[in-house]
Length: 106
Image (cartoon, rainbow, N blue to C red; front, side, top):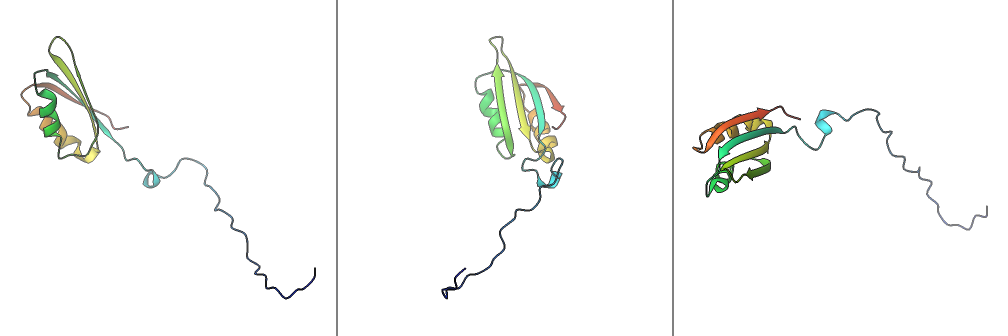
C-alpha cells in the first residue's frame, strides 16, 4: 500500500452477541400471563354496557360478549392474573350473571 498521509482508524467490526439456545426467560417475555374468566348471564337491553362499566377500572386484555335469541349470553374476559379475583367478584355482583368460571392462566 502507498502511504498518502491519510489517517485510517483501525476499528474492530461489530459482532452481535451470541444468541442463547432454548426458550427465553420468563422475565424477558413481552406478554405476561393472562387469566381467562367466563361468565354466563341473562341477556337484557344494556347488559353489555353494565359489564363494560364494571370492568372499566381493570386492565382487560380482551372482552367477548355473545348473546343468543333465547335470552342467554356468554361473557369471556382476559385479564392480568393479579386482577382475576377482583374481576370475578365484580362479575358475580351483577344481577344478570348466573355463573362465573375462572379458567387456568396460559
